[in-house]
Length: 120
Image 1 (spheres, rainbow, N blue to C red):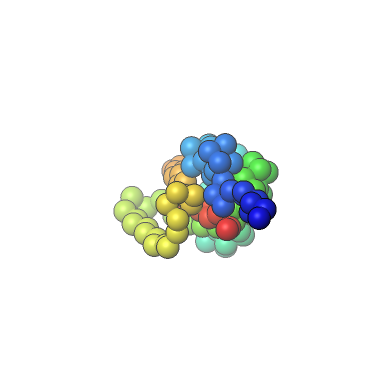
Image 2: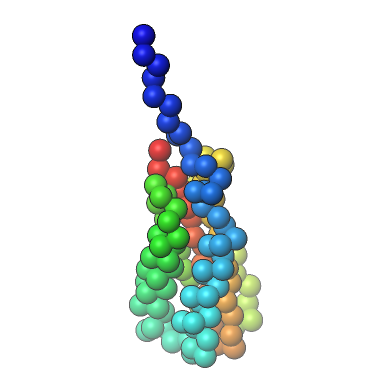
């Protein structure tokens, strides 16, 4: 009787989504895109979409194979008020994770959350 072929269901350590690296990517994109930007409600929708797309592409370029990425971008006017954001999800804590970053200047704030979910 032949033995069944061995295959890994989960990624090895080197192939896992790394939140620290994702956080670096997010911070670099936010700094490049939003430094010196001035809040205007008409711009935020397109900015959020463009920033999310750029971050998602850069995460894909990292080579985390079999991962699906979801990127949320929130942009608001800096008015000295607090903001609370929350999310909930159902995932495998051994393979899935997320990274987040906040950017602020005198005019606006931007909060980004990027989720890496392993596709079994």
